[in-house]
Image (tube, rainbow over all chains, first blue to last red; front, top):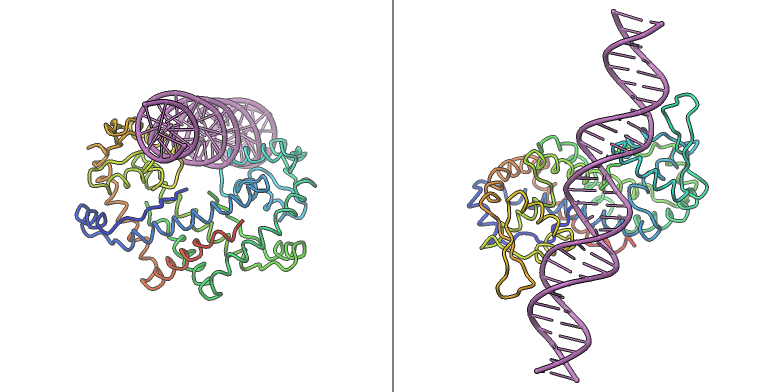
Length: 167
Length: 167
DNA sequence: TCAATATAGTATGGAATCAAACTAATTGCA
DNA sequence: TGCAATTAGTTTGATTCCATACTATATTGA
């Protein structure tokens, strides 16, 4: 996503305000900080998953399948839940199937459909990674005290609910 | 990055805790919420920039160049500041050069180097997009009151500074 | 019933992104 | 000085991801 490392110097900020008068510098700089922090966190998760041969996209597919009672879902449904296009989901499933973590089955009711099922190996993979994931994430989130963490989560969600303002 | 739309149901959470006992559900769910919110915000920025034929990577290159006194920098320096590899930066510069928004010059002092300069068209592009960007982002960030916004930015940065815990 | 429309999934082509390998130029040290 | 190590930038090949277009199947409504 974005890893803009260097926040602007005060000199370049001055220059900026001269060129674009009336700019609320703190709004912009908070915005960039948020993006950068989020990107760092996401990259760290990537790195954790990579140690187990996974990437975020595929990881979330496994997690979504685990949530299902019969460990089964369809590509379209998975794409919706994961927030990616169907084309992207095809790619994830291809990769997961290649590694034997999920299997494709025909849907006998609707012959356009496939059923994607978490395989035994897929469940084992989850059982291998999940405890590490849970432990790391818990430790990480406890960097903040409970009230700060709640406020952070709530406020960020509030903010994100108004992304319609960015258009 | 990730857009996991569907947060787990309480039933699937129960199942989760059964399989992975001792899990701090709220830590995990806060973590996922943060990633999701950030992803939504980043996507919204993508969409805004796309309206002007830009993408985040290229956009940040233009912004970084604008910050320089002589509107000039080198690929390596830009890569460092943007937090991408040199190879990725080569791609950004190729694209920007193709569109005439930056130019490549030889560095006469060090013949391994190039100088990348923001072109007049590049500055015009910034002048076209920046006011919209500034206005949208300002409105967006003002969804939160000043104290909430400050706390959010600070706490998120604090959190991100401990990504070493995710490993 | 059957043609229009909608839906499921895949294929294609492109951009972003990285790691690793490569070339050319510079620097450092023996 | 001269060779080894470093640095700048690109190329290559891979993966992720999207938009668009395509195929096959299902649904709907006249």
